[in-house]
Image 1 (spheres, rainbow, N blue to C red):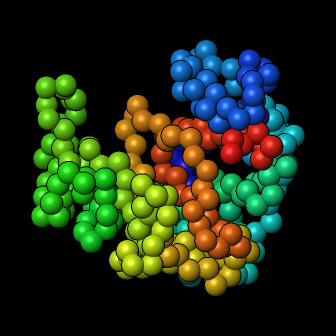
Image 2: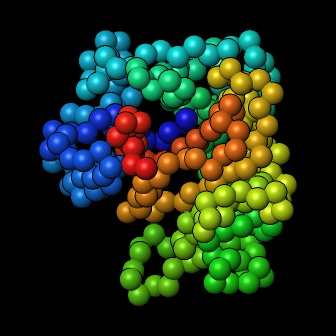
Length: 267
């Protein structure tokens, strides 16, 4: 929800991958798009949501897109404004046939608020006591206030291989609330720090609009990408309560997200 660039979804294998074994569906599709050069990639299996919401929606895969109903009355305009959101009545929401529970909302934010949340991720949420990937190699004192330590480096627009990277450029992820253990792929009750109240409020409003009143954010993972970064293939299955929604806020350049049918998902 809330993309700076365009978001597209790969909802099925392309022709060259159709005959591959289902157990490798994720990896083969991921490798196909990652290795493709701009302008040469086969996008026949991709749905471009920036085209779908146009008047006729004639883009690739447009027939698979359906409008999703939002609970407009569940979020007051005042609460939406407090979270930096437009009134829910102005949001657009879409689903995909064959993928129950998937809801895509293109940019529900008020002007300037995507940047606000990006700054929160860089300047505030990256601070201690939250956990980040740098903690394995550095002390808490060394990773305190990454923004202040890095902002002078980031003033230089030219990126040189000789210039040492700032700590913020080395930041890949931060965990919030119940901290995710990347080794055993689990959350534990004894590894917890307070979840940011402003991000919790934002999540509460979006969840309510999608029909999940009373939702309370307890854990979060922030991913930080460089221009050449990719998010590795994975299945979100560590959550203990599958009756609650999993929210994904994306403030980024254009991207491609893959969705594969359950029968093709590897064990």
